[in-house]
Length: 296
Image (cartoon, rainbow, N blue to C red; front, side, top):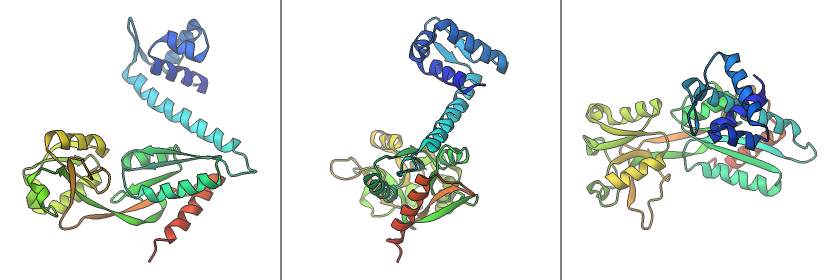
């Protein structure tokens, strides 16, 4: 498979018609159709469902789309690193992170670097631990921010000087909002919205203890914003980390920490034996410098 052909394939998947994809790529429709037929013959798979008005992807086509996006992204990232100007600090740094208020520390470092080196660009990717480590392992990002209990044993890492606190997001007019903290018994048989991550699920189960068998999990999420809309509309209870959803002012929502307190650490991670670009190495040095300011 040639990179050019994968880019053609992605254009069709995005535009959903041969004509629009050909127009975007500045090639003729017959040429594009022939390239896709050759690609299907090479793979021995049917990639498209050709309808009257639009083209959709088969199951094999959706798999190829995912892999093609990763391949093209990695090639673009590699080209950017190789073409970076050595005379000044420039290039691209790719960072993946779960939802955490501790990202403010990284944002502070990014702000300082961009002020001093305006030709250096950052690219942020948000996802849960599985999403971030998958992209890290494939070389699509340079650094990841993982919230414990995510396993960091196969990475090099720096422990971040901040922690996050687990609690319950609920409506301000809910009876439980009158409490300063939430205990396992308070949530027995309540409709709960929980993270999809297995490690997080196990940690929460440990916090509930014997009450775990009485949990009524109605919904799961990987990022909290959409789940917060369910809390607002349906009056359910979302188990989440603090400071991710605005609960101040006119917000109908509030956050109450768990009791006993459930606090988690965070780590900035990267692949072991990673050969950094000049930009990534500088970023890591600046992160280390910033983190030392928070040490007791």
